[in-house]
Image 1 (cartoon, one colour):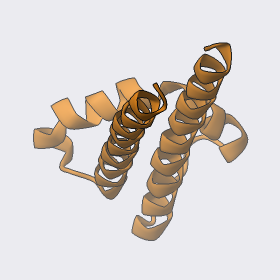
Image 2 (cartoon, one colour):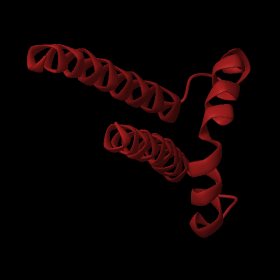
Image 3 (cartoon, one colour):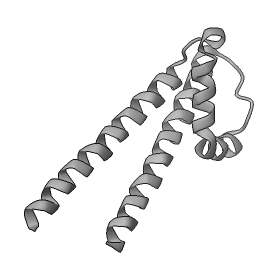
Amino acid sequence: MDDRIKSWALKLSLSYALIGTVYYLSGFVWLVITGRQVVFSPLVGFPLTLLGWPPMLYADLIHRESLGIRPHTILALITVLGIGLMFIWQAIWGHINHNKDL
């Protein structure tokens, strides 16, 4: 049981980091393409975005009327949906395979 919890925690941590990376890189590329200034250096901005992407994504969603929907919001939501479906898929198949062993 302990290995399953460690495996689940590792997958969750890597998923969190993957979503943060997608959010940061797509936002960075969007700023470069549109010619806007990148305020924070990637050395500062990436770790901050990696840790704080959920409230930033939430802010993008609640302020979509004034800010518009940006590509990094859409890509982050697609990534969250994909990873969520992956976790659900693994939970269902893990439960089915576990019951077959019994």
